[in-house]
Image (cartoon, rainbow, N blue to C red; front, top):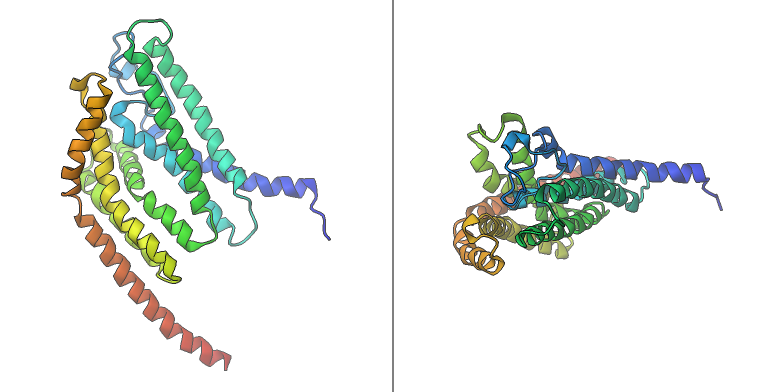
Length: 307
């Protein structure tokens, strides 16, 4: 039995760890390219101009909740996806990649929340809403980090079906990430004219392409189709509803009322965002049929050469 030297084993772990670090950094990169300036805070301890807000690695604000979730989640998805393709040529472990993503996220969280705590005057008494706001943001970030770890695991699997499932679930956050990439270059004051169309249609294209890649064999992959089509319909409505509730400044930290506002607007948004489902389905069906025809025509040709 051949023994693996510690040096070779360390190098085998170094590659996926570097991929994980790279994926985590890539996830938050659009925010950093845009300047990384902390958004204005309603509860900031002192009056501060927008350009004088401190630098943070994460967009900590209830008004940036969906972006915050997206940049964290996609760090794990990017890393896992890279590991999936690297593993087709050489054996790599997933856990070092997940650890690399986690390291980036922990550093970003510690730096960002330390800045936020100082600016809010946390621990100095005063407004009780400060602690609620800080804890709410931290809880949401921790949940996003855990989902990023799940996304890394799913998209790093050898099974195309499992990877495709991870991709379709991340399609809507990916559209947010791409939108932030454009805003990082143009600035929030001058968004590209096509940006409003990016959010509904890019996820449909990503989901449709993932369904073609996934295929329908074995039969359990139909689950990926169902989940993907539901995701491209439900997740945008869910994001809009959550952002609506969190962004209602008039509610002034009334959490139950914010939840009721989100629940109330969710079905209305859901009734308006069904069109991308049709686009994703058409891309998936047409692409799958074309792929099956091409593979069928290729098989006899291969058989003829063998004979």
